[in-house]
Image (tube, rainbow, N blue to C red):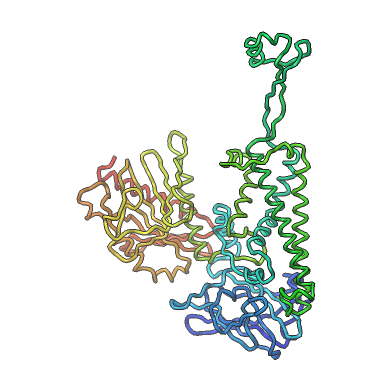
Length: 582
């Protein structure tokens, strides 16, 4: 049921506080009594902006009313109280809290673009829900969606930060629900459409090989003979009345099927354990005699919780039943239980086996896969933009990887993508390009290394987002520094000291292989990448400095950005030739 805010004895107001001191209030307009009743065509999201100082006020007449919101658990504000039953943070009647503030002393984490649930619980047992939408300042929704999709498509899980929501580890522990078990159930539920399709296909057609078996039989009977049969006759003339006949059979007991069976059996055990856990919890909540559960919960709230747990249990039983389809297959019984010492190569070749293996690996991790629920949010947008921009840089040279012989240039990943000091190496004939993400530049020449960190700095700025080191005929010929700024164009000048330091204070004892290397500046250019949501693509070169401002925006044309990078590399190669490197 839709409940206009004006009809309720409470109000929830968000306040943006801008840098000039001005304030902007936004009052929540719509509430529903069940989140499932929310209809985008009828109800209005409360829109707030990312990275803007933000406050929340809760006004009410009911002194026992409480306001809960996703993300409260991440705030260290003592104005928030703790629910003794669920251990969730909440804002009391007529309370006020700061949700985000730009501060060097306070560790505030900005709300990320997306949907957040907010609820108000009154003392008479009623609950009212609304949805708050955080919008991006620098990107339109479609641009943000493209960026997230690009990052998640290439680096699964990197784009997410799991935040504690309604099913927090604390609340799960209070209900005797293992949070690890619950997370594993969520992973299986998320992927189950894929799992069901694959299992249904495997039930009909699984990988196999042809095995030979030999049986001794009377010589007068029809037989199939091969080299082994003939060798046996020659070696054992005493068995002239017998023939070693070859019989072929289909062998399903392959290493990949053994691992497949182990995975499916493990998932079935997990689901049975989850159902048992749900049943125990439901009985505890339903029993008036079991005081080990939260008996002080309001009856209506307890009833809703029981219904939710029953729904989880039902889904788990249906998933377990679907997995049992493959167990009835004739080949399944022929596969033995063996613990693999190594992952069979086929697990990565056959797309069906690979997908199930990847899902099983996800069960062991800490991240919940991407889905549309409210149980997680993306990384903060500035971090996501940095990762996405790095991927665009890598793609520019990945697409260049073909020489005159038509062979693609070598692509060597020396560490896991998007990790500290990560480097990707390309080689195009006599040209080598090393692209390092988030690498630290040392402050002394003794700490450099020609192939991994060929530069050092005399300044204090030593951590560019991306460093591109170029080599010609095994000789280091220079570097391009790249920094990503999730800001408006006019705000980029705030970082001018940092950018100038990259251009002027970096040195290399390896540049051009020269003995008098001190007179060379190895940084050919410093690029600043920033999003321009309205589609601007013009590169701005700062007068008298080796610094260029380059727009790079998701879902927009990237031709100018790509040509800029390629042209800079071509310039460096020409300069190297002028220095005598052929």
